Image (tube, rainbow, N blue to C red; front, side, top):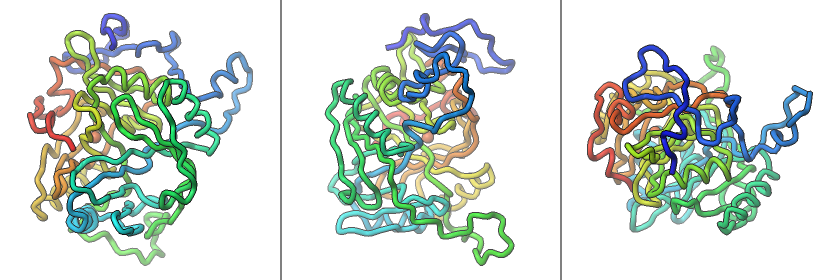
Length: 363
Ligand SMILES: [Fe+2]
């Protein structure tokens, strides 16, 4: 657990920063403000070196795919294609693999039939195959067994490693994912393209963006993702005792690739699709309303991440989000801290309040 008195720095806050917000230096952060990346072996190699030529990127790249279970595969597939506008990459006896239109990789969502809603695993891409060896060693040293999944065992991807996180989620890391290409031209706008505009009755997000999981011990889980897997923390929400109630973590220089909030271990709060701007969020709200999809919150804006958002549920009760905006954190981005007394503004900036359903419902 983090003691707020230990982590609160003396940095000034920007004018207009909401009450309850404090800009802090993350625990164990280097004194010069840079953020140490424990999975990045370049940093040790470069210590004291004069060269400023960058080596190849290492470690975790970004979220790859989310694998969830559902009790009605046909209904879920109809929603994720007919309302969300995803494309089917593959079908097997018990699963449907889906991707967004601008994603090159084989899939970003796997739906598997099961008698109970839930999450099978979260899969993150790493830059290179040998990153799997480094990260396998790190997870093993932490004390968790690591399973090797051979190439060909999982559809659309090469060798991967799997392990449990402290919050009881199965995490997969993989470098080699089949490129299936996109259904539309990569050059946009492309006057020579035969592409037709997307129909207005689907949301059609270009890609998956991030996910949010539950953990009983947010602090312990956050340390695992930072110290073992090299995630950087952009924001945190602390209770009155300085304990982390929520943390926002990134690898792809976005406000978050993964967030962890207090809740039952193994829980999935939501996964989120990227939209390009606020107009697309508005259009998504129209599509959701037209199709009778139950909204949870929004359209609105987050204080944390500054992103614009809508939360809603797929027909089987898994929470989805569409998300856009937010900042671009460089490695020297100072961790932003919100306190529980300002949780309303932190989570939903316009409303200044969080509804009970948003806090309690997960799959
Ligand atoms: Fe989100």
